[in-house]
Structure formats: C-alpha cells, structure tokens
Image 1 (cartoon, helix red, strand yellow):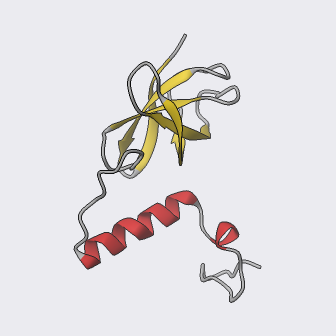
Image 2 (cartoon, rainbow, N blue to C red):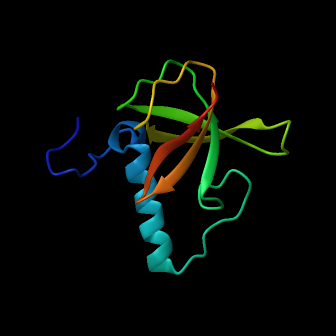
Length: 115
C-alpha cells in the first residue's frame, strides 16, 4: 500500500513504488553524489540527445505513451530493454510507426514520426 509521504513500505514491490521517471531521476542524483560518470553503453539513455522508438498503439496529440527504445546498426535496429514515457505535443501517430524522441528537462518528447 502506498504511503501519503511518498516513502516505500517494507515489503512493497519496487514496481509499484516508483515510476520509471522517478527511478531514473534517483539514479541520476546518486551518480552526481557519488561522482559516477554517465554510462556510454549501447541502450543507455544518457548516450544521445535523440532516441528511436516505435509506437505500439495509436498515440494521440497531447498525451504521453510508454515506448520501448530501438538501437544498433542503422538499417537493422533491434528493440532494446529501455522504456521511456514520452509526450506528444504535435499530431496523432498511428500504431507501429517509427518515432524520434528528444530529451529536454528530464522529459522525453516526440520530435518526428513516420507517416
């Protein structure tokens, strides 16, 4: 059961305790405190300013969607394990379409979409 003060209860599942955004912010803060350099491994959310993803359902303008990132050799990209929540400020995007995301102010935004 979630607490009103945002703390995690003993035995509470991590999945129900934190959003991906909150978890990533906590990791970023820990990296700063510990002086750890950002990772540059393939699939790392810190290695690029733009990210490739594919929609899995209709994505309406003015809404967010959880997307799985894609990466690898151009022309033979593969689905990665990283997922992000991104916001669509521009137009409706059909399911199964390639999208390009950019990260600004610790938030992902749609910047381009396949027609």
